[in-house]
Image (cartoon, rainbow, N blue to C red; front, side, top):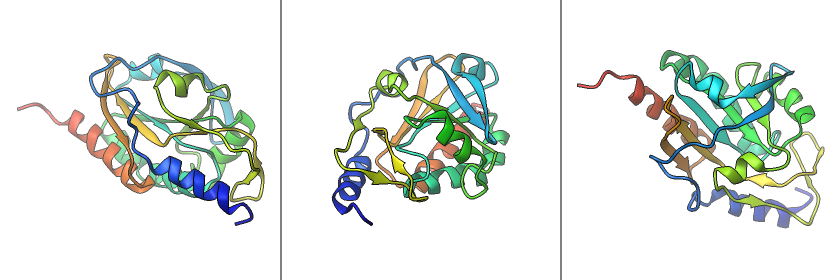
Amino acid sequence: MKYPLVAALLAAALAQPALAALKAGEAAPDFSAQASLAGKAFSYSLADALKKGPVVVYFYPSAFTEGCNVQAHTFSERRSDFDAAGATIIGVSLDSITRLNAFSADPKYCAGKIAVASDADGTIVKSYQLKVETSTEPFKDSRGVVVDHAFAERTTFIVTPDHKIHAVIGGVSPTANVEAALKAVQGLAKPKS
């Protein structure tokens, strides 16, 4: 990698667990944002999505970066399992909608199966009390394009239709993050005995 210090700092920062993030049982901040699915921008509303069932709100550092590529691909591969549990998925990053249009359509990552929302000014990330990391050195994504925004902490929130946070998942690998999210929504879908 051309910028080893940036890569090392980014990896260290994003591997940390979500210590300051909102906790399970707290109210999930509502948000609306410009999002993309299969390369097409649309207006996303968490409140509207919650009318259909639980929502997996996953924050990630940046489209087209190593861990985020893996996480998006894993979510897209497991999408039918989330559907079966009655849950929808929305990814949130500080990427521009232009970057997200490309990412959401890319068959290697979102594959047109999961929506990703642009939080370019960091308002949504901050409302969930997540860390934002910035770099003073240029950083290039997996396509060789310079990333010109800060990086949100990789953390997933499972939000129930009553607008409460059911679970918070952070400090694990991108794949483990997806699997833990799936287990959480499958637990919600099981009848209580």
